[in-house]
Image (cartoon, rainbow over all chains, first blue to last red; front, side, top):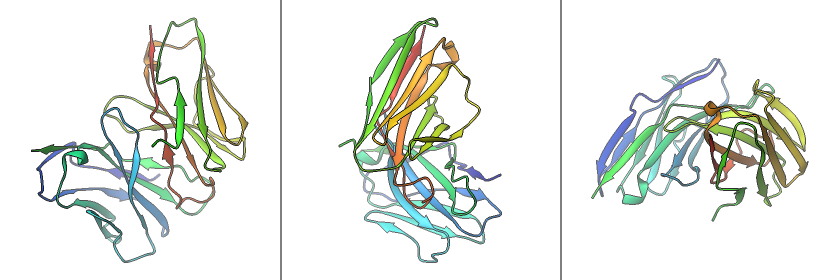
Length: 116
Length: 115
């Protein structure tokens, strides 16, 4: 069974600084997808960034980038120039690309606080 | 703007009541999902519908009854719930269940409280 581990229950960052959220996963699959979702307080969960396992290039979306280390099964999220609106719960998630069960497996989440 | 619309936003019900949660999307997605989320926890998958057919039931108690009347609409019928069922219920949709690279789009959720 796949597992996703986020070892930092809470993180804080100063506005305009950079923060990195950690995520590791365990799978025997060779092809899969990894996602970071953001859930602000009392607001909807939205996709931040997505990575395809067979692509070696790290995904980037504006201030958000990932460090994907397939051999180490690591998928960290870097937020640059942090803004107050980045404060949220961040979930790392895994989804296999093969088989028939494409269930999204979430980590336990990291609560990010942005200090002004 | 929320592309997946859930109603109601809040629901308080007694353990003997019957109520329904509603979810609607107009993105042409053919996969729809129900999740249960407790405070400060990740969402837990309950049901998956693919092309209006139930594909996955994660061993959810029968007091939760899903329904997908058409490709845009997903309901969750509730009956005889327990206090531990109090949670945020999230609906999500994606292009197709068999396209795992396509992200799921989530609604704002219904916050359910069982008295």
